[in-house]
Each structure stands twice: as structure tokens, then as C-alpha cells.
Length: 414
Image: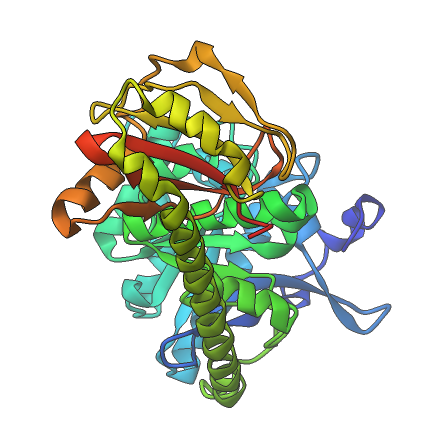
């Protein structure tokens, strides 16, 4: 990292001191390099080494005009390099929202001011080979004007990525407006801002959102095999990080990391298969054990259900944290029997009688599966309970007369 005391010298050097470096991006499906993120580097003659310019581009106190000049210089060198090599690969170019907003100052956007459009025409590069990353930044411009620029890029055929999800200015707003082709997550940044459990839950939510939007999911900042496994478990189909390669001056053979990634995929696939099989078996074991104990409830009507359920509490597995019954319309018809920790004595809450759960996803899904598959049981994915501070699952079980039992279980102890 370059600190502020270096800045006055760094921004005053000639063009030859600023160079693009290229960090490879791999596609999981074929295990090949499919593109490179272009990263600005400054050559330090005193230390005879290249140093990152990232600090400069995110420092609001610096000369913005000079930074834009350097940004454009690095971008042109990268596109010229792509042209000179004749390689068919993608370049991922960072586009800072505040820099873009300075271009669109009037009511009508002047396309001649869009530097990247001029470059692809000058060097005859296909827009399909360029991905524009809308980077993390404290954006204080007009979102409507930013969106109009992004739409121009899309119309020309550029792919759009939203960078650094989880940090920076209103990421959800950006995603909603832009609907990116690629959603990019920096594992390192998110890990530093979240505890381990929240970190994984947020990643899972982002992965789910990318699937629903039809966006590719790119994980960057991967440095270890554990982080690579995490990215794969979240459904990432694009990978980037020091685990594969640091940014280099030149492009690399597209199969440079093919064997490494294939070996990792085979290992991950086997481990993930065993994990899922264990989860399925664990869920089925709970269903089998509970089914025997709760079968007696199927022979009781609405009037007897609260009494019989209360009498059964001592015989329920210690992992069960709460239980109550609803009618087919989702209205709770028994007290909620609960305990804060497995194995503790049961308490009851009568105030929740009459609550409605018909709108809850677990309840709707249960009813649909009962109709479609004639199932008596359904089980949710593990979710984090903020009050209990632990992972739980919701079991739902259909009794006679279409009454439904709702059971919350400590999944970490099953």
C-alpha cells in the first residue's frame, strides 16, 4: 500500500512509470483463465519494484484530474496490450462511479467523453471482451446519470460487474438499478468486517441473489484452499486471488492453473457429497425418531391436542427448543412450549395462541409438499436464530384433521 506522504511524488512521474498488471480470473466449469482484472501499478525507481496505486484511487484528497489521467493511461495500455497479443480473453476494467459522474455533467450524455468507447474503436476490440467493474466507492453523484452511462455501456455490448459487494455505497441500490452480469465478492474485505457466522450467512444470501438475478458470481481475494472451498460451496463460477496468481506484467497460459483447479474440484466434490449425505441422514434420523413419538398426536382432535402435547413434552428429544400446533389456515391453536437450551425444563406462552403463520415460507412450503407429495414432514434449511444465537431448523408435521405441528430444533446438537 502507498501512503499519503508518497503521493506528491507518485502522481508526478511520466507515462512510462504507470503500468497495468493483470490478475487472472478462472472459470470453474472449464478450469481455464477466461480473463484478467487490470490493476494499476507504479514503478518505484528508488526500490526497483512495482507498487499498487489502489490507495491513490480511493483517496478523496488527491488531485482527481491527475488520477483520471493515470486511470485512462493504464486502461489504454491494457487494451493496446490485448490488441498486440491477439489473445482472445476478457479484460476487467475498474470504473469508479465518481469518475463516471464527472463525465455526465449535463442533461445529455456526450458519448465522445466515454474514454473506453474511444479505446475499443481505436484498437478494434470487441466490447464483449471487456467487463466494466463498477467499483466500491463513496458515490455522491446522481444515480440516474450513472445508470444512463451504464445502459450505454450495455447497449454497446460490454458486460457489467458490481464490485466489492458488502462494502461501499449502497450495494443493494447498485444491484437493483444496474442488474449486473457479474456480482463480485471480495472474501478478504467481508471477512474483516463480519464475524465468521455472519460472514458465511451474508455470502450465502449474496449467492442466492446472484442465482435469482441470473448473474455470474465471482469470488476474489482467494488465498487458501479453505477459501476456495468456501467460494465453491457458495456456487461461485468465477475465481480470483493469490491462491492462483498475483497480478503479473503479462498474460498467462489459459491452462496455467487447470490441473490445480481440477484437483481441488474433485476433492471438494467428494467432501461436499459426504457433508450433504450426512445432513440428509441426520434429518431423516430426527424425522424417524420424532415420527414414532408424535404419531399418537394424530389421533387427537383440536380440544385434546394442547393437553396431549403438554403431556408428551418430557419424552421429546432434548434438541427440541419449541413446539406448537396450527390449523390448516396457519392460526396457532396451542400454547408455545419452549426452552432456551436443550434439556432444560419446558415453559409455555399462551399469548401466542391466535398468531398466524400462513404467510411464513416454511408453512406455505409444507402445505404445498403435503398436497404434491402426500408428505407428512418437511424440514427447512438451517437458519440462524438471533434470539437463541444458534443454528436451528423448523420441522413441520401434519396431524389428523389437517392440524400442523411446528417444531424448532437446535441443529448444532443434532
